[in-house]
Image: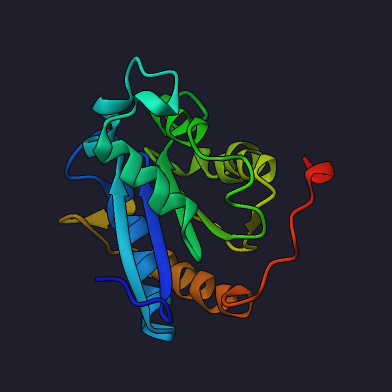
Length: 190
């Protein structure tokens, strides 16, 4: 049951696998914010929703589970979006999921960005791929993104002290942006 007065955090993992370091990372970010401010957390895993997106081109054709995921994203007070890096970008199904999100639904919504990859060479994916995607939605991408490489995880959890510290910094820096009332959206801004 959702509580209208509590922060709604929706964490989207663009990983196509379970277990997933990307899911572990976005969940850790959601938990860090929730520790600072009471919140309800919903984690959307592309590994679960993704197969129902394949071949669908119109939102009206989405199965109920995928539509619920889209509505959760559109209703988030804080969106945490993370993807593993594939060929220097986010996963294709991650992008396809956001193709169904209404272009006005994320206007001024704070978005905390995250990515995972095989090495730290892909850390700029947050800046070069994820930020532009959410700029299209006129979302408020938060200043601290979190990248973690495979070596930063152990037993399905973030274990690297530097990454854990960055998660805490991202949560701290997110707080001033939560609970703000967005400005009215005018059609001319799209």
